[in-house]
Structure formats: structure tokens, C-alpha cells
Image (cartoon, rainbow, N blue to C red; front, side):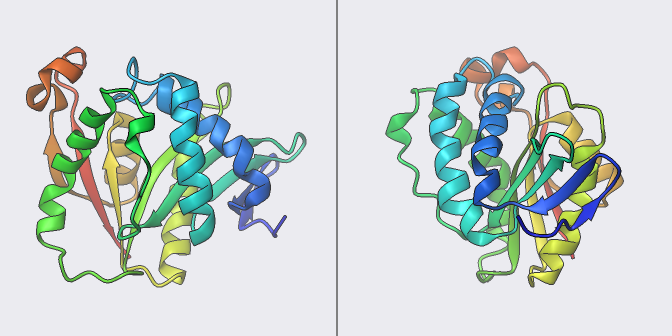
Length: 214
């Protein structure tokens, strides 16, 4: 395992490597199926795992800008922050997912449309997509996303990126990046208004598209 980027008494923060992948996929699958507002009730953890395997092993690991937090005394991955270039093509076979999966993609496409309309001239290596963050059950409330998000700003800048973009579908993600780390709101949608059949249960829940300048 490579040297930690940062550490405290109990935890170390690392660039994600192959040795972290299996635990990261486990955490992401659980979170994506049980705590992600747009996917709760749509995906099981097993179905989410198929997607996470692809995104971690085929995208995140290859680009080496994803982060994990590891507990020192157990060597457990307790937090994962998955990122890759915004122009990286995600060629995941959506036929492996349940029918309602398409509605999630449609919501995110709508959320990011405004940004894409003004960034046609962006080149590979300029914009990093913060794709998903997840914390292991039982380790919530320790400020891991604030920590990993702050370190990501430095990692991305050192890698030559000029911006980081995020689809903030959870309130906590929006709060940390918009209110604490200085990202600006590019667009906002209310999924239940756009797709009432799929997201009517979310009522007035908002999703924001955030942009952070480096």
C-alpha cells in the first residue's frame, strides 16, 4: 500500500488502489442501494454491486484520483470517494439493471444539461467528476466526506484538473461542498416534479449540480 496522503490517530487517507477495491465496492453498493435518495427502493445491494464493480475497476482505479479512508487498527476501508475524468465514457451495459434504472440516468442527465451546454470545448484532463462517496455503516458522523473532499481539491489540482463537478443528490453532499468547500450551484432540479412516477416519494427533495474551481 502506498504512503498515506494524510492521517490522524485512527485513520489514514490514501489514493485508492487495487487492494482497496473489494471493500470500496462493498461500501458503495450498500450506500447506493440503501442511502442514495434516487436509488432507494429501485436497486438491491446485489444489483448495485454490478454497477459498482464496473465503475471502480474499469474507471476509478485506472485514473488514480479516487480516495479511501482506512482504519489503522483494523485495516478496514471505511470511506470511499470515487472520481474520474468528466469526459471518460462510461460504457456500462444498462441492460443489467432493472427498468427503473433509466429514470436515474434521465434525472442526472437533466441535472447536468446546463453545465454541458457551456462546456463543449473542455478537454480531457480539465474537469474531474466526483461521482460518488460512501461511508461504511457504523462510521457515519466522523467528517470523512469533509476530509476526503478537502484532500480531493489538492489531488485534482496537482493532477492538472481545473474544475470538479458533482451531482449532489444528497443533502449532506450539497452542504459540505457548497457551504463548506466553496463549490457553486450550476443547476437545481426537483426529481419528483420531472419524473413523478419514479420519484414522487421524494416530495420536494432537491438535487444540485455543483462546480468547484481549482
